[in-house]
Amino acid sequence: MYRESFQRSRPILRIKDLIMMNDLEALAVKEINLELYIAKILGIAGVKGKGQAELVEAITGLRKVLSGKVMLGDVDITNRSP
Image (cartoon, rainbow, N blue to C red):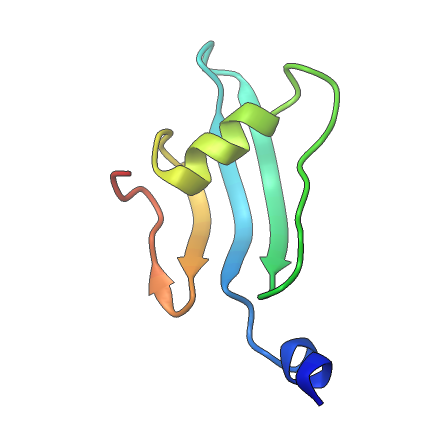
């Protein structure tokens, strides 16, 4: 019962069609989509310099998002300060 309630829950973090640039004004992240649910673990991995740092910075408000949305629950936190 406890586990089923987590599986049916709404995502606590949603990223929809996220696009952003890196420090050199080149495309770093193009149309990323993901959902994070309570009691789940999300890892961001890949080759260094391929957008992971920019994605984390956008989620935390450290980097400006050109397009797309970052939602924390039902609150749009896109481009908000940390």
